[in-house]
Image (cartoon, rainbow, N blue to C red; front, side, top):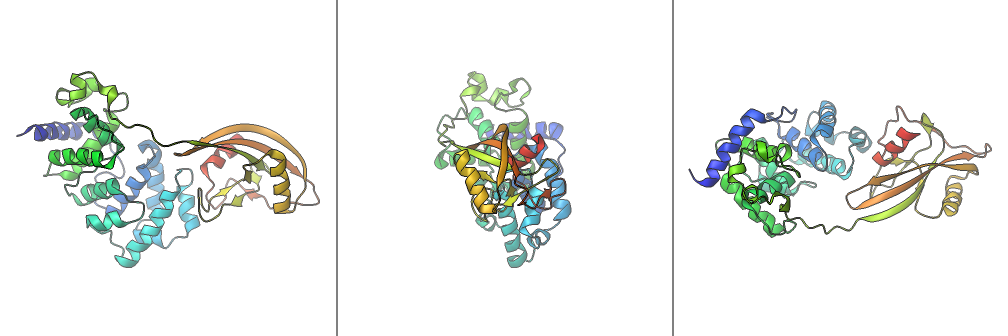
Amino acid sequence: MNKAQEISQKLMEWYGENKRILPFRDIDNPYFTWVSEIMLQQTQVDTAIPYFNRFIKRFETPCDLANASSDEVLKYWEGLGYYRRAHHLHETAKIICEDHKGVFPSDLATIESFKGIGRYIARAIHSIAFNQPSPAVDGNVIRVMSRLLAYDKDLTKPANQKEIEQAVEEMIHHQTPRDFTQALMEIGAMVCQKQPKCEICPLKEDCKAYQSNTQSSYPNLPKKTKITNHNFHVFVVGNHQKAFLIKRPPNGLLANLYTFPQYEMPLEDALLLFEKTYDVKVASHQALFELNHVFSHQTWHLTVHQLTLNKAKSLALESLSDFPYAIAKAHLNIIDRL
């Protein structure tokens, strides 16, 4: 047994004793695996679980999802954020239903060709759902492997990520590759965290970073994305029970989601544009509070105002407690504070 196989064996033994019971684990359903992997992008497991359970209860098959309206799919995603994931799920479900007779394909190249499924998710599905020895490298795996190997190259570069992938491929436990893939992800999530719990790690004697006490140096992921800041005035007409909402355009950030009207311009200009757009007159306005909402590439700084309109004109108010369409998470946060 070589070194890679020894590490794999230790990992598999640890996983057998310590793995979490999750609703999308140990199920023989590629569609469910796909949905869970998409949800777990940018989302913690504990947050994703109730969304996953609710989503698959309503959309039990790819064709159930394909035949639903975009508004309904977004409603079941409401609050999970990164709504582009839901749009991609819906689009891909239509392809699976129409071109693959509702059966999720097992071919790796076909899986990777679907919108919203990149290299990592394709290999995770291929390994977990179809028990194939495909090396799936996500953030957790990069953290584990870079510390094990003391791999100090820039891991934002695809060529270096592929070197990590090759190292994983050498370790894969071929009897049960789906368990190996999940074990490597699991130890990254539970033990080899940003602040690692090395004292309980079954791989510490094999870990070069642990041996040299350099765990904090790995992985090497220099930040290159510039975060932009945007300042908006948000106008609330109504209250926490009923308020005026608008639907965003079908493209761009938060496509097809509902929000309060918001404007990236000086307040007086925003008020004038609001009046012109909705043919109303603002009798008074009051700043209520400020809050920030962080996306992966930008931060919204929201100043929320309560508007009172001239009674000669009115707007249709929607019930917020049972609104049938998806409201953007940033504006759900506003509703919580009204």
